[in-house]
Picture 1: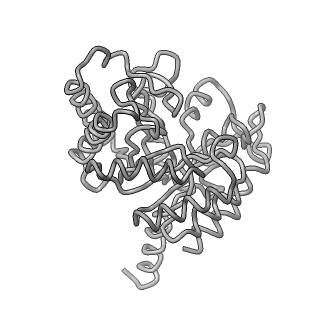
Picture 2: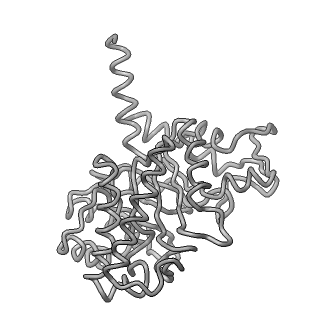
Length: 310
């Protein structure tokens, strides 16, 4: 290998450690229904449009047994194949629910109802291990896994509610152990919806560490309506990186794109961002006719500044 090729390879590996990502969990559903994404008046693969604007990670959520939503295992594997084919790294988001899980709701999967705590811990382990094996066998293994979605109020209620920290930590640990049983090299994210709430973030992480929960990355959600000012996000982000010596990612955001990415990339151990559902929510990057807009163009400069300069 020539020196020039080696330098290029090292640059690529380093740049891909940093994330300009997007949760595109509804992309395949839109394309399967006939929705056409367009750029400069021409139809184009949605995943290719994101790649061409500097995105390098995709985040995909997985529900246990969804009845209305498409994000089951088969669907998610198919979408992950599209992403991997186009050179994306892959963050898998376990919801541990049949539907949306967030700080206001963490509904237990129907299949797990009426289990004892010990049985529930085993169910989390087996489900996580088996789905990870499916991703591995489909050649779309996740580069990073978040064990639960926005779990600062717990997950798999009522057993894993935040007022039962021992039970919650056992459930999280079961998911982590299952990931590591399939791949010891996969990074683990602890995802909390506390972008600007430092005291609550520290409370949660301290309690997980005190109970021996191992993880690599702290994921934050940041929506100003719920998570404070941009200055509070910056303080929390920097404090968490220093306090725990962990990498931190803004795993969900929408507004204030330049400011959020500046914080996430310029902090000592910041590793980037992942915008939430940019196809259809809040500051969507496509209009209702599928035409891309100027929100998407913001990432040309962000990727040039924060990925190409790494």
